[in-house]
Structure formats: structure tokens, C-alpha cells
Amino acid sequence: MNVNSFSGGVKVSRKDPEMRLTGLWLLPSFLNHSCIPNASRLIVGETMFIIASRSIKPQEEITISYTDAMSPLKKREKNLSETGYGFLCRCKRCMLERSVHHEIEKFSDRYDMLYDKAAAEVYAAVTNTITPTLGSFPSCSELSALYHTLNQKVRFLKGLSRLEQQWIMGGYSCAFLGNWLLIGYATQFTPASNFVNSTALELIKAMKATESGLQRTLSFATLLTMVAEKERGKFSSLTEGLLNFALDECIRIYGKQRLDVSVSLIEQSAEIVPFF
Image (cartoon, rainbow, N blue to C red; front, side, top):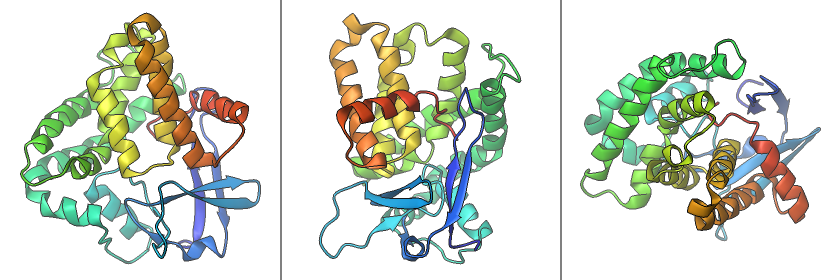
């Protein structure tokens, strides 16, 4: 039951703090794991849909992620071990991250130390336990600084393709998102240029390149679109691009739907906090 059941995840929103979905589906339990999966899963009532989140070639194995693929290697390995799967992932992404482990080890260790504290800061703000104010979330602030330093480090690692750089940075997405969200909540995402910036736009591409068809990415894209619309004259072409990005990600999560249904799903995703 432990290794074959599926969880629909914990969706934390500003209206509904938590929603947990767990069940056992026999055929999907045969799907193998990858940290760069090509399929997503959707639970509707008692039915699970497996949806291609990337183009899948003939004879290519269909894979899903058994853990949070938007985590660094160390955290993914720990999660797989603690849940009892009993294997060491050897997907292309894991092999890459092991090859550069010594160069980014200190970032991984610090992330591991700060993550739970940062998650608590975000959760407290979302559930109105505290009112987010500038300077009131030290762990998220430190993780944000770590993210920017690591981003520069990864850019100059020799021999890495752009996609491989995205795989690494996708795993540290929460290091950026925690501070981005809390400052946004504290300032009502104003001015927009502080939030719709090159770092945020690079990260959302990295998240999609790492694991497409993820609710967290859809929510982040929707929030970026909404913030950009505040200064539509300045971000008009970017707003359209972000909306198309969100629509594409919506299809990879929910499958092809009528346009009005997809738009409604995108709008609802704005209530999901893209951290958990």
C-alpha cells in the first residue's frame, strides 16, 4: 500500500488551506519513476487519468515521478528512500546532478536546512497565521539569495547544455518562489516589474523543462500573467505569451478541454500557492 498508492498531493490555497487525495489504482501502479517524467496524473472522483505531458515516441516508456521532482537531488533521494521504494534513481537528470555534486553541494545542504522553515513561513502567511511584511520571513529571504547565487554558478559550469542547467534550477524553484510569493502578498504584487522579471521568466521555463504538467507551474504562470496585466501597456506581448504558456500547461495537466473549461481551470489555479 505504501509504495503503490497514489497521492493527489497537498494543494494549499489561500481559500482552502489543505486538500489531500489518496488512493490505489492497480494499472497505474506499474508505471516506473523518472525525475524528468513524460506523463502526469489526474484524479477525478475514483478515476485516475494518465496524461502525456511531453511528446512520447513509439516504444518509449511512460514514466511519472514518485516524488517531488521540483526538489534538489539530495531531497529527492531522501524522499525516495524514506517512502520505501528501495532504489537509486539513475535517470539522465539524476546522473547529471551527481556529476556536478561537488560544485553545488554547499547550496544543496543549505537548501535542505532551510526548506522546512521557509515552508512554515509561507504556510503561516497563506493561512493568515501571520501577516506577511517585508523582513518577516528570514528563511525565504536567505533561500532567495541562495537561488540567485546558485543560478550564476550553474551558468558557468562547463559542459552543461541549457536544458541541463534548467534541470538543476528547476529543483531549486521553491528557493525562489517562497520569497517571491511573500513579498508579493505583502505588497499586493506592486510594482509589477519587481515580480515579472527575467529571473521569474527563466525559472518558469526551467520548471516546465524539468516536469511538465505540474499544478505548481500552472499556478505560477497564472500569477505571473495576473501581475503582468496590472501594467498591460508595458507587458502586453508578454501577457499574451504567459497566457498561452498557462494554457499549454493546463492541457498537460487536465488533457484537452473546451477553451472555456481550460480558462476556468487556469483562473482557479491562481488560488493554489505555487510552493507546496
